Length: 502
Image (cartoon, rainbow, N blue to C red; front, side, top):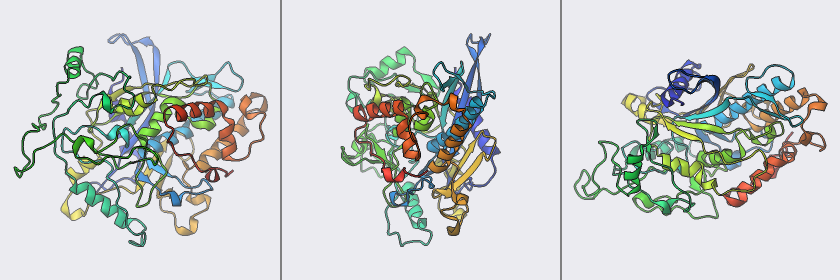
């Protein structure tokens, strides 16, 4: 069994070994961390546990909390649109997978892939799987959980202000978000059973309650108590909802942690009612930007999509027999609910059917660590001194992945960290994780493949642009059509004009 604390410790230690560039200023800035780990289970069982030993290796790591607005998106694919930690870690993992596939097609040894029976296709080696670690619950639906403590929101919504305010194009926006995050202190309350009515699929059996302190599901007796509708008291900070607040005037009511991500247009909006009725659960959401709307779906939504289509994406699906899925998701110490994460990542897609061969709904093992990220918002507040000014999210995003060339990539506002305006539009300004760079890496993989060993999907079609190669991955596109039509009909369609680069 995976030890959640061991995973968190590995990730925090690896982050500590990275260079200082792009990291938060201690006591003043905070960020979120995510990582992808390759897990290799040995064939021989451990004498103590009777299960196979698991070797864990971090293959990609990312930090970040920002997104660019829709008007900043580039038709050249040279801007990194979404810099949230989970997305950064996943895109870094794509670089790692391309490297491993290139080794495989070149006849070198790959620790990840072995040949498939299908021509030009590859599959995971026996015993190899992937694990996702995130220091905080993913933004969006997975973050809408009952409150049990005073911890503040991880990603406070950003207030829109005129773009002319602030020469940096965003400094005042940053301060607005800080004020909102610091001033919004919600009362703690009893955790109440939200009931099946809040699940988008009423006929789905909800998972057992989670006990984060033990990193596993509760015992049958504890789960039965929860199922009988008894409120669960998990912390001494929980208070009776009949008590008055500090001023003795207003009774406390059950409340929830809120997300800054907004419901996508065309569907039910948040009701914004007090307490538990503030959010509409199960909805697709777009991330808040620096003043203007973004087109980036929340991390909860992206993880749900990867849970059906795989996290490898359309391009690598040309080479893979099956989608690649996270077999385990580990969350660091933070407000968390297994029931809510299961709803956000799995239950919303539970009814999707008629998927093509190689694709299926993956229900990962969900674990929580008792170890908190040292640069979390909560820890940053504890280390903060008044002389440091306001606490704010770190503006940079860090990517590290286990590749031979240029493993480290630090970005800000969608471009390489530290570039000047004169560099914009040149290769010097591009992040190694932007669509254009990943596409070029994929093309290098195709070029390294012997023509006789190419997958069938890359043999018969005249392909030029990024859009062409994505659409030619027909099995992936059929799976995406089934997922969108059955579970996410409101998922915004990407603008084709932004995908025609080559």
